[in-house]
Amino acid sequence: MGYGHPFTRQFLYCRMNYQETLQAILNDIEPARGKGRVAAYIPELAKVPADKFGMCLLFINGEQYGLGDWQEKFSIQSISKVFSLTLAVSKYGDKVWERVGVEPSGTRFNSLVQLEFEKGIPRNPFINAGAIVVCDMLLDGFENPKLEVLSMVRDFAGTDAIHFNLAVAESERKVGYRNFALAYFLKSFGNLHHEVETVLDLYFHICAIEMTCEELANAFLFYTNHGSAPGREHFITNSQTRRLNALMQTCGFYDEAGDFSFKVGLPGKSGVGGGIAAIHPEAYSVAVWGPGLNKKGNSLMGLKALEMLTSRIVPSIF
Ligand code: DON
Image (cartoon, rainbow, N blue to C red; front, side, top):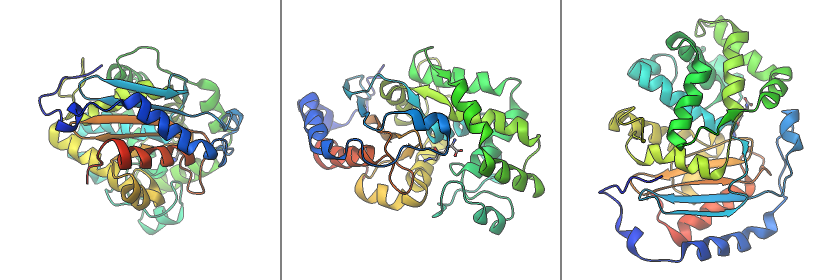
């Protein structure tokens, strides 16, 4: 997919051999392959081999470059929080911000302490508590929010081959003690309208969406392209898209958001499945997948690859 956008940046025309330079990145990060820890707190994710790695770079004009396991499905986990938030913003606009904040958390994605401190208004929509409130909004706004999210993501990615992995959703439900705690906490503060089980059922399914790097890069082109995708033209406004991108920049990597800004310099979102999707407005989207995580729960190999990408090949936003 591509939009041949009139704002396509000048650097697209300096004819670099992207496939070769991406391959050089892969060679350089090879020593990190298999390092880090696969997310084991969701038993189904613990089965994923740690030595996978894929990357897809997609320019707004449709030029696409893939590397390694870029066409293999993986669990997008918290990357899905960008999609559910997009749907909520399309439905409720600024009302979303009455129930969830827009400040970086500086704490882990599933912190209970912070929620207590802030009296049930989650710091931002990308920490688990914030995404759970967003799911509650989607239950208010749509008859079948699971289908609504899935169909939006399929349109963004330009393919119907995107599904929930039901085994992953069920696996997380069985051991989702922290998310249950967060949801009951939110309920006690009056910031959850629906039953905890119903909200978390939606939350676990959305986290369990499976996509490839290619599909993710295509879906994230929506955020590169002012909130428009084929079949979803002007789905959200330009200004709403800029704000979602700002949130990805400041909150997309939890307590590692500063480091990601410093080293990579792109709005993006990570997931404990080992995926990261990031964008440069009006220029390109990129998705990486490496299941081995660092201590903060972000892909070890993915972070290295993106740092090299914006140091050597394409500009960051700064
Ligand atoms: O709720 C959870 O813990 C997972 N479904 C998602 C967490 C996640 O991906 C955080 N990102 N790095």
